[in-house]
Amino acid sequence: MVHPNPGTAAAPGASRRTVLVLLGAALAAAPLLGAPGATAAPAGAPGLDDPAKKEIAMRLVSSAENSSLDWKAQYKYIEDIGDGRGYTAGIIGFCSGTGDMLDLVRLYADREPGNVLARYLPALREVDGTDSHSGLDPDFPADWRRAAKDTVFQQAQNDERDRVYFGPAVARGKADGLRALGQFAYYDAIVMHGDGDDPTGFRGIRERALRTARPPAQGGDETAYLNAFLDARVWAMKQEEAHSDTSRVDTEQRVFLREGNLDLTPPLDWKVYGDPYHIG
Image 1 (tube, rainbow, N blue to C red):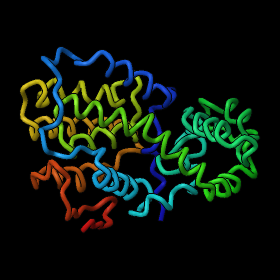
Image 2 (cartoon, helix red, strand yellow):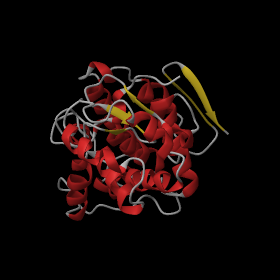
Image 3 (cartoon, rainbow, N blue to C red):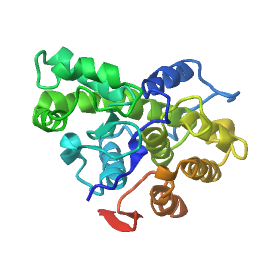
């Protein structure tokens, strides 16, 4: 069962392309917010970009976004979940109304000219910033599912996920001195909220957390900082009715934090929307 959860979209009115632009600029200027020398995660602890940890991260997000640990089955996923962002689709919830779907289909067209989705590029440019299906219906969902069988399109989804969401989140987490759990908390927040200028974007959530705690790179305690970050994340989620179920924090990330599992070491047991999941 796919939950109609708009967590895959950025804040309304902000293109999710801003995630890469703003985070990239911030990282280039690191350390941020007066950090006295941003440091890497503790030596010897694998980061979220370790292949095994990255697989865990993909499965955790999929449990929240698609009620399944089989994240690779989501290349073909597409529906309008009624969140004002048009179609949501693929492994990270690319949205027709927020720019990242347009970027993905453009990349696919560059790599495989004349593919089944290339003809929708004009329509995707027109609907960017809206919830409109103009020029997409009735065939776009079926054509998306056809494209999802193409390994070129699957790789394009992987690459855009990494470029816009995963890579920036892990880099910021490492700069803050966080281990795999903290890097995942950043990643999941960027996936849901984007990184616009509004208080409920990732940067706003991080800044809210910094009012009460400091990350390890700034001399703080990692667990205390992550608790503050998750508090700020819950606050941001509750600002929008569609995000108000906070179980992906309360019964997932908080569970690992209470267990002291800062490296996301299996076995992992958690719940999202009341459904139990396990990674052995």
